[in-house]
Every structure is written in structure tokens, then in C-alpha cells.
Length: 296
Image (cartoon, rainbow, N blue to C red):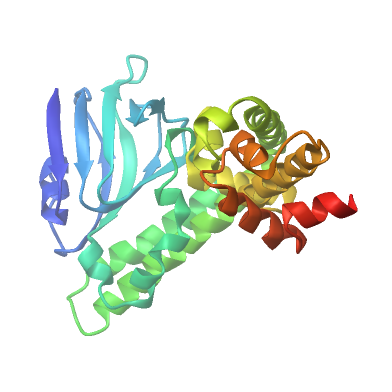
């Protein structure tokens, strides 16, 4: 299988067969007339695609991308994506914005890229756009493209970065809308999270240690970032806080059993050391486990 390394904008443009207008950013419109070849793409760039058909299948890690026509997929430096042809739609059609991390050096956007967690989302979380959202997306891309076709001057970089930031902020808004409109799916994920959490605390914690957000995200076939946002939007609370509450409730239940020592309870709940359990319990209740036991 071909390995494609996209470490520079020039690499990306050469792969797509287009001219490079700026060394650090590019907008590419692709409507292939040749069949898509299976490959593995290694990203050294940020890349945002508006997929206009289902011309290929994408896999990020273990999971296939959930995308259809008019969906946005996003990749960050260091990510590896497998591309496979779709036998039903052999030709790809998409618009891509790629930009090198160096473009953002010493900029406010560069310092805030961690806000845009959709770059970390695993493959089941492509962004599905409405007709109106597609128009907005294309409009911002057009402004970036317009700057790329102008002669470079002292304003070029600032204007390009401003429009990239505008596009990323629109994507944040569109993802929030998607969380809400996919409420039934989101609710089922939260329900499964709660069931898995209760089962883990009662039957797995002693053997496998304290539960983590990453564990439940993986069990729901979601990335930690997307899973955390979904739980927060659906419940108004973070997944970490929900885990802590469930642990606390279980701890109080065990403390009612006088045959169990603090050390035994600590081990059952997955804490490495009893003092870690005591610190956790006191931080949430204001009392040590022993003090709580005396008054309960």
C-alpha cells in the first residue's frame, strides 16, 4: 500500500497536481477523473476537507469515518489516515484547506488551536453540514482563496489567518448544532456511559484501577474529545465529574459496611493507595472516610 507523507503544503499540492500559491497554506478543489488509489496518508499539516461525495472510505485508527455528501473531516499534524476507494463512487470530489503549523507561529490562533477539538475527533465524528452551512463554509474558503491569488503584501498573512480562524469558529458552531440535532443518538451514548460506569465501579475497578474518560470513550467507539463534549452538552456536566460522583456514591455505600476497612474499600474502588482514596473523599465531602463513617 502506498504511503503518502504530507509534511509541507508543497507536498500536498504536488500530490493533488496543483500549483503552490503560498508556501504555508493552500485551497484545492478536486474532482478526480481517475480512480482513487488505496493509500495511507501521514499528515504534517492541518487539513480540513469538505467532502462533496462518498468517493472514498477513510479510517482513522480502528474506526471508519462516518461521512456522507457535504461533510467536513479534519486532520492535524501527526495523524495517520487510511484511504480506500469506494466501489460505488469511484471518483472523489472535495474542497480542501491545508495549512502548515508554521503559519500560526506567534499568533493568537496558534496559541488557541487546542480549542478546536474536532481535529482530535476520531472517525465516527465527521461534521454533517446543512445546505446553509455549506454556503457559509464555501464563502469563507472563497475569501481565503481570494487572498492566495492576490500579490503577497504585509496584510496577506493576517487576513488569511483571520479567515482560517473564522472558518474554525464556524465549525465549532456547526458541531454544537450537530450535537443538539443528534439528540437521540447522544442520549443513547450517555445512557451506555452510565451503564458501563456502574458496571466498571462494581466489578472491574479493583482489578483494573480507577475508571477514566478515555476508557468509556473507547467503549462507545468515540474519541475522548468528542465523547467529553457530547456528555457535557447532553448533561451539562463533564464526564470526569460524573465519574467522580459515581465513585463517591459507591464509596459512601461501602463505608456503611463496618466489616470493610478503609484500606479494603480503597482497593475495591481501584485506588493505588489508601491515602489517595482519603484525599479524594475529603476533597468532595469535606470529611475523611473515617469521619463520615462515624456520623453516618
